[in-house]
Length: 201
Image 1 (cartoon, rainbow, N blue to C red):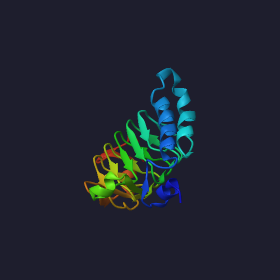
Image 2: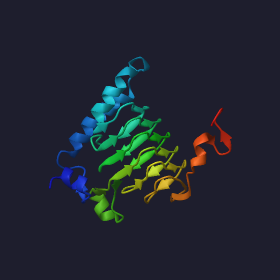
Image 3: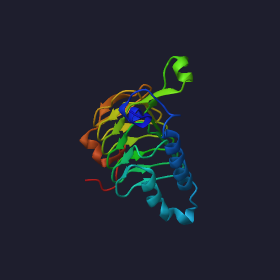
Image 4: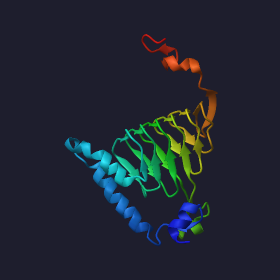
């Protein structure tokens, strides 16, 4: 296997070998262009983000600045929205479902480094994929670590560090992040706890 194949397989690899440095540089050029579009050229953002990411649904909005390593390993579904300063370290696959909502200053990292300093100095690393289901809201300042799956319809509270899988349909918070309760059908009519939308039926 070459370094890219090792990287995507979750095996130890070296990011400074093979074609990986050139791939990151090509992605960095596109991301730089995306992040520096003047407001009167924001109409070009959709085409540019499609040139960066591996798969992009309809109605996608990613507010700059945005950062990623390769781009091609990221998939986002329809009506994906990311606020400012989303950072996705995509040495492994990262998949977001439809209607995902990402708060500002969120980090999604598939990459890990050896605990022992000797192999770390040599440049070894590894990656595990991350999957985020449909209708997930990830609050401001969340960090999602390698190998995590977040179930559909869940909410990750601001500032959480997600180190293990989160089931579907829950509110999960903390460091480490854990589910604290299920989301109830009664909340359909609330915009926050105890506060209903006007004229909610």
